Length: 304
Image (cartoon, rainbow, N blue to C red; front, top):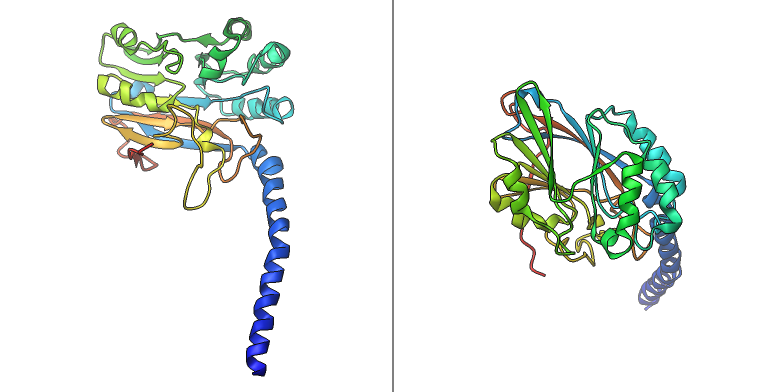
């Protein structure tokens, strides 16, 4: 009898303690998701072996940033200058920005964006494509800002880089969600068999770009990795055209895809188990590099 009473007492004490601790743990997790993780930028370095990359471009370094959402990213004004300073230390050959500079009307933030983006430095320049949020609001003022900051926007266009007799084509697709993408127009502009990389804001566009057989790699953003990545269940919500390939490295047919988790946030200013990301890619020619440094995650179709 005494033992049973003691066990009941212990169980009740455990439940009371758990009940008291749950709000404390919840508050700690919330504080971390709001104040800590959104500021813990992951500088993700990765080798990418691309089948058609010529030896002249072996070791070519591309840095990708995405989804600044400057007006809804709480720490943007203080963190972005620090991030750009760190990016410039890599002495990249090329920097690419894969869309969503803002979340809403950009007028109040345009000068900050211009000032910060103009500080990005790369040997072959800085390229950009617009995202869905950019098109939903004042895309004209954003385009003027990019031009003033020295960035080149690609609108269903190709930017070709030459090293002796070798070429590397960087193509940029207009936003697919807005219905402006034209991959056929891009393919028509690439009339050789040199390596081509596609910048496309929405990662699920890979299901359209891969079957063309023309791109070795697609770089995307858009999904933020879900911002909240719960154990066992993953992201509770992902945006349209960002559900299938929300974060990381995939292979779709013969094309590779990398989805950057972005720097900023939308809807909720939080991140959990999904830190912001700067992607640093070192391109490798198969004629020089024998194997990829990092494994490729095979893409899995997710029913939505």
